[in-house]
Length: 316
Image (cartoon, rainbow, N blue to C red; front, side, top):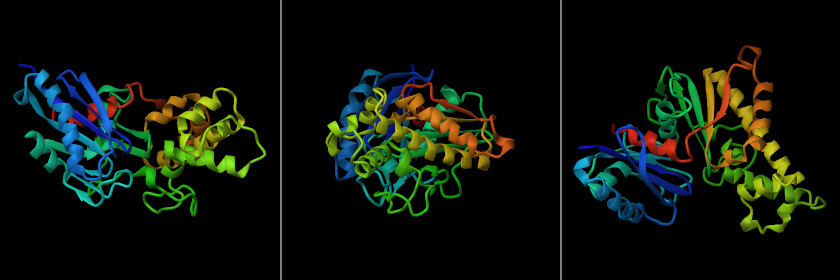
């Protein structure tokens, strides 16, 4: 009988999940909102209602090895989500324990970006690499660092929070953490929206297609659609975002000397609008010994697949 695993990626906005077979193929997947519920038990109930029919379709619980889960601030040592700034559930959430109780299946949990790094290492463009960094550009900025073929988790399970490193001291306020000037407050989809609001406010004299949208309708996606139509402010937003991201990546390279940096997440849909300024500012801010050595690439896995596959690998 075939055996399957379940991979779950809890993002700041959307939770994606799927049933994965032994060959590392997602045979069925779906998604739910991450922040629809004030308490985590209601979230797990909704997740169970969606996954239970999938489990039945592969022959029931006896054919499921277990559940692997990636989540913001997920601790691989304790199975807890701890003080995640982009989720409604505050404090320390014993997620793996709650999932095991609800599903009656063994559940392992890790940081969502670490799960994505594992997926890239096993099934994606980092297959065969022993030194690389994944950067997730979504609602927030996550990261997974692989050195000598191992994901760096640190002594407490929380190593690799590159999105919360401060790149502009005294800079933009991150509403979730209260910190100022962190990478996430600039280079996430949320950060792109904030940059759009700032530039439109600072330059009221400049015409822009972005002014056709209300504040509530301004998103990184609307910025992209305006940029590809040649809008000057929209293009400036991506130039600025790429500058911040590129400078940050240069720091990360000089720390760990990776073979590659893999970018994925919703913001990468901007393609060269983001890639070109990012690569330019990354190279400009590197010491000569690091220049033109590190590949900067977009993930080849479908969006979310890396995290689902990586999470499922926790229980393989």
